Length: 90
Image 1 (cartoon, rainbow, N blue to C red):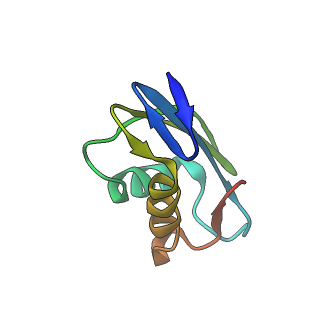
Image 2: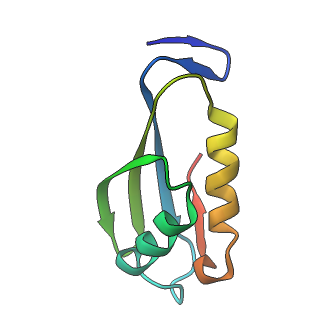
């Protein structure tokens, strides 16, 4: 895979980590189901680990992919009211 700016060409992936910043928010085991349901259905997502306060997710990408679009989609999903208290780690 080669990289040019924010676009990956070929098969690649984006690793994402979401963390619970509010102890009253739903735990990771519940949050991951909602998060995955809010991401595009054609993305192949692999749950690398999930715990009460942390979700580690890999999204496999084929073809030209704008990593910024992936980040925006995840940010949009995390903005859902059901996911209050969760944020993506930079």
